[in-house]
Image (cartoon, rainbow, N blue to C red):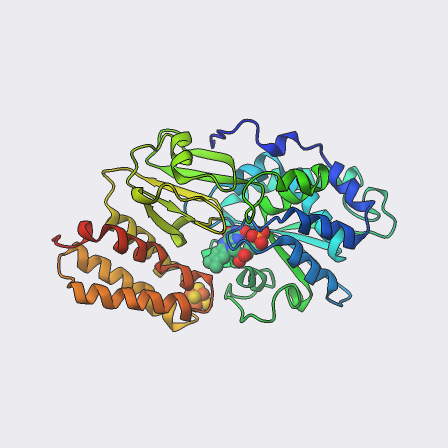
Length: 392
Ligand SMILES: Cc1cc2nc3c(=O)[nH]c(=O)nc-3n(C[C@H](O)[C@H](O)[C@H](O)COP(=O)(O)O)c2cc1C
Ligand code: SF4
């Protein structure tokens, strides 16, 4: 059971299916314009504007299009989508249905993390109830000519399959390996058809925005990062759990709320995110400053930062799909360097060279996994060098 510390989440205040009914009464272009006006950015990590993505998919010419909900939630320290799927699955399916109407798709697919298999019966029951109510199937909610249904497909436990093109490969029954981009999924996605891939939370906000309006959403957050955001908080704090805060909250304010005062660092954005030291707790959590898909890991004063780096790099070395050299060979090299540091046999020059390798990985890796896997290591070296050197 995960504690939800902001009671109730805004999602609890949204009237079920009111947003969908409103959307179906709108012209598709006006509906997408409403999402664009809210300035909603994807809640899965990359922060791509949802309205822009949907506009591109809507404009693509094809007989068949797809809506995919990314419920892979594999980023270490992330569990907010699990709470949304448990407590607000209707809202997620409503958002997917709105997406289907907006871009002209007939099928939605939820790609569900293998470890969330236990959630499947619950999600299937919610889908069945929606079919009974006429909210899925032919003529959705009485909208003549709009047919849309949703099915669930299970992931198989690979972190890289959360990357949208690897996810699509996996949906098609292939190895979960990222594709070259372009072409992008909005143009050439599932079965080479235009496809929107969005995070669980993004779909729930879409339904909320349609119900409450773009202005309501925009009134919260910062100018460049509008709205609320859910956070999964874990680590050295007294109140771990799922929180909802406006975008733009400072790290210090968040730590106060979660009982993490006295922390020496916070990992924002999961293993692939950045490690922020106490001197930077005045920074804001927003796309224009420290961005995140929602994972916050608090490190208390006694936490060994080298062990943190070791833990994350072991994960990436294991999860690299091996397709490109910078990531396949780079992650084990970074991990080896951490082990050398631990044994006190890493020179300052070698550490500097390995940091150079990390920076090369950030620009030369094929997908977001290898581009972001050095982030934590590089920020830990930058801020905690004194703690890393001279061990053994
Ligand atoms: C290695 C890797 C793993 C990812 N895992 C997830 C995930 O579990 N859930 C998710 O929504 N996005 C994940 N993403 C981001 C997706 O590629 C994509 O940007 C996102 O699903 C788009 O949805 P959004 O615009 O609503 O955020 C991952 C990206 C990478 C590079
Ligand atoms: S960066 Fe890593 S996960 Fe991504 S394609 Fe290259 S080897 Fe695979």
